[in-house]
Image (tube, rainbow, N blue to C red; front, side):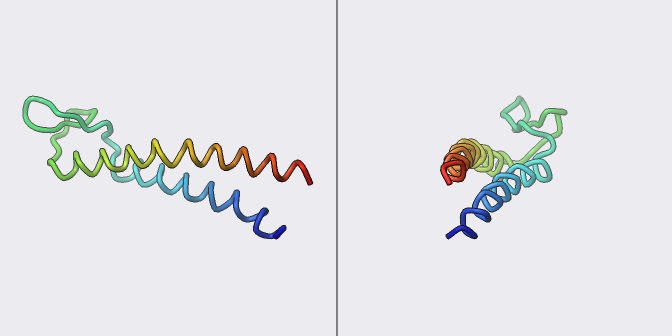
Length: 83
C-alpha cells in the first residue's frame, strides 16, 4: 500500500503534464476561435473546422483534468502527512 501512495502522485502529475504538453505541441497557435474567414489562431493563421473542434476537446479536457488532478494531489498529500 505504501508503494501505491508513493507512485500515485507521480502518475497524477504525469497525466496532467501530458495533457498540457499535448496542447503546447499541437495548438501552439491557441486559442483557435471563429473569425471572418473561418477559424483563426492567436497569430491569425487559418485553421480548419476539425482543428477548431479538436482544440475545443483538448481545452475542455484540460479544464477537467487539471482541477481534478490538483485536488487529488492535495488529498494525497493530506493522506501522506497523516502517516
